[in-house]
Length: 251
Image 1: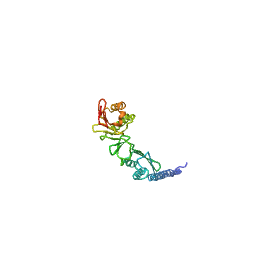
Image 2 (image 1 turned 60 degrees about the vertical axis):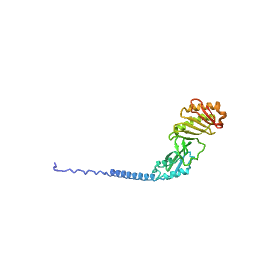
Image 3 (image 1 turned 120 degrees about the vertical axis):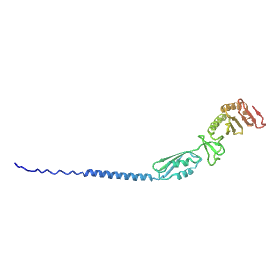
Image 4 (image 1 turned 90 degrees about the vertical axis):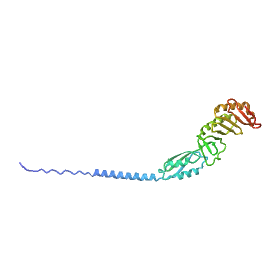
């Protein structure tokens, strides 16, 4: 029996781990490449210029050349860098612009929708009232003709517009047209008619006074209306009438 024999162990095979490092290297390279690609794409998008401006909306008092000049002066930077508010604010600062909506249209266009002021009456000597009952002052107040003229204390324009519509609603069936409606500092109403006559309503119960005027017109005034200078309705019953010919009054 042999003793003292030593058994040699076979060497352990070496495991190659290069595949794992290779995968990590490829992932890192791919990540860097993707970041670079995103950086290039971002730079490209941010540097895109605005190549086209589209103006929409029914504009009659403004020229499109005037609008384009304001828009061009307001565009700074590229398609994505341009601040749309810096375009909208100068446009809405133009007297005839009621509202402006500015949008981006991919890939390189800016769309501007303009809502023009719609003047429905003169306000005082140097302004208009728009469709929302707001006062605006354009440069050329003589540009529009044929509109009624309203005047009154500051802040009364909404109430005065409502009263004008009520007066005209009652007078139109009579063939009468209001050209001027004035509210005094105390709230009294006076209307000038297209034929030169004057209606004095005072402050209260406008709808009742209009009904009374219609009844008086049909029963007594229609035949001599062209002779009439003024109808004063500031009475609880009836009206005071002044004639152009002899300045006499009837109540």
